[in-house]
Image 1 (cartoon, rainbow, N blue to C red):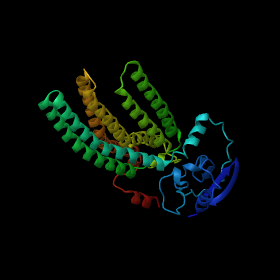
Image 2: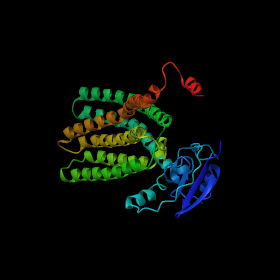
Image 3: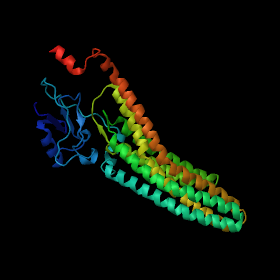
Image 4: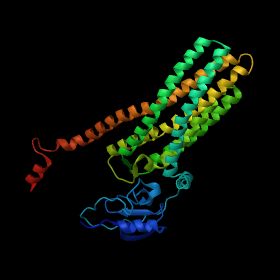
Length: 365
């Protein structure tokens, strides 16, 4: 089998052919940039070099040291590389995404996820302490039996959820690495990144306006948490490698549809550790505020109880996100495999009954 030959272009000037190993060396030496175009036999059009899996570490899934970029074996027919297309007019958003990618790469995305997961785990421990303190305060200020009983129930629930949430965050990471996918272009990732940024800013501004106009200060921490989660979703979409996704593979319409839906689903699942951590931090802040309210004057007890309930519900919901996401991930994986099996079914029906693929090949010979 002949080695795969690559062509590359810089500033609309075509060069090549070169081997896959030479192409990786050019990228390592800085003579091939992520924005430069590359092409090989079997590709229908030129593609940005950043879309070649394994060529640039910052834009591709981890690959063994020294390994060449992955490529599909060429067909026997020999064809020349297509002419380098004229550089199209770039939208300002394209330039904005190109500016963001190298500054917010996959390593940063993983670090942010670990940070928020740690905040969630330790934040629940702080919430347990604050919840116990609030129960004691309310026992002296209002109902001793009811406050201590509700506080004890809350402590047991939070202790269990603190353990469960951490375990299921690990399970989600394992499922993310175990499922791979591909997309033909960055259309969906870039679109999701821009929409997430715009929605995050809208949610943040709405929570600030609500806090100022109607004094709904309890909504402000959760608005900030939603803003952080949506910003993180934007970073995930800009770095498909964090979802074990490659860009540039050609596929049929059905496979592309499955790949697009799976990308959106995995991006949402990747948000779970950040949503877990930010939600817990907001709940802890509200619990601290609830502990202060009984000493703030008349009417403080009723407001404190409302704030305490809001904080507890937020903590429980945040801690339940990882196990719920894990179960949803498993159900989606079953549906995903079923859809792929349906796409393969027509080719299976074309095989003569009672014969496997080897026997059919033997008959043809």
